[in-house]
Image (cartoon, rainbow, N blue to C red; front, side, top):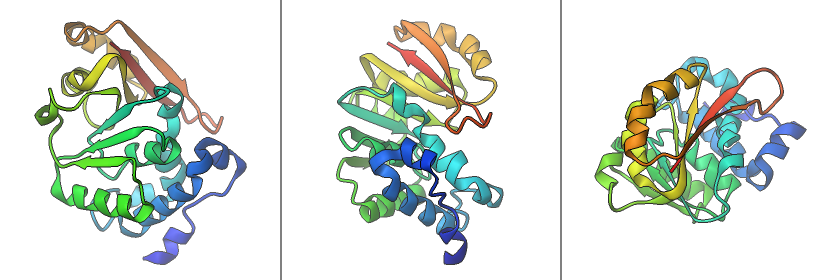
Length: 212
């Protein structure tokens, strides 16, 4: 399955600009996903043609909203999106990947070892099992749960003054409206929905910034 993987990476100027020093690592990661992701139940076959832009580079949509320093928790890391990409782009951050499924933990361990990500710790646990023990300046999540449920899972891990950065689709504003009551119980002070169009091609990712 190595042939399709060789074609997945786009060496265009914009991808290089977005990923910066993390480009080479992201390229290796993308090729690993292309070669094994479908077989290991990490990505669907229809995702392969858009793996690079829609999944790997798209993970960097949260980068402009990350803290200047400190720790980050990526909840429901799965294939490593966005956590692995964030760790590559921001090697100065202490990144914690939280994933309860053992087969995905095994995959993440292989990826972290292959990419020599010394700033990453993997937690084979459910997010709620780490409440009270793991806190960070930011928590990221992509395709994990609706925002009201996600708030309960993640906000106990967000340090006061920090933020949850949830990657969402077209219904982001609707999810925010439904989650406001829950978010208030966790001391949320501000919620903003950022429209991020990394390639200026109309493919918008909405990053919901929920700040405590």
